Length: 111
Image: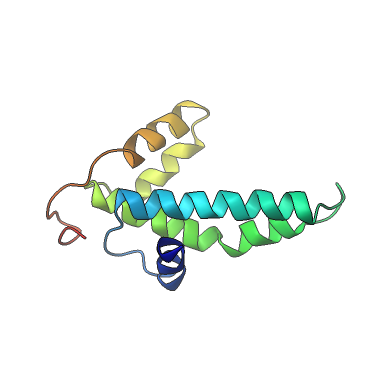
């Protein structure tokens, strides 16, 4: 939970680095809360559900934590745009996210 709160406090910080553990713990809590809201609150097909609102509220946080994770492996945050390529883009992005951290790089010292 500390990784999730840490990501929330750095919502508008696109500089620096995030460890692999910090990134995946954020994703884990995000997915658990999202599906919990979707299951508990539900909603109709015509309107925004609580899970949709949660997802929209954390959109910038998700982008920033992903950018910092990409910085940790020595890549620019702009590599997130590869996810717009169907299927292959997501696979490449997931491959990047599971890479081990580098030492110090152009984005700063190792976290």
